[in-house]
Amino acid sequence: MDPNKAKNHGKIDQFGYFIRRNWDAIVRKYNLQAIPYEQIASWAFGDFIFNSEFDNITSTIKARRACFHDCIDTEDMFTNFFADLRERRILPPLS
Image (tube, rainbow, N blue to C red; front, side, top):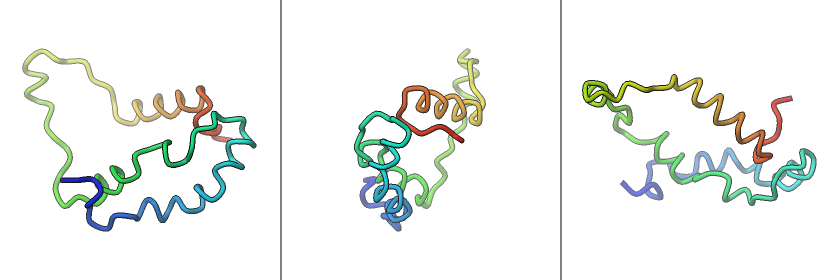
């Protein structure tokens, strides 16, 4: 399915209106990299993935049976990912 044709397309974009409106000020305040708001994330893909009408979670059992045992907890992965974005001055600090 085309991410641009997701059901209810625009929800994230509507939510992001406040951030988009203030993004340049946020970048200046926190000395972030000057990356345009539209390039920070794939907003259309977010709309697609959060509004799809089917299950996006797939089983990893076959991969584990084929000896791909390495894994990372989803919460740990996102914690590390966002920490990296803050360290690279793409996202502002938590406090």
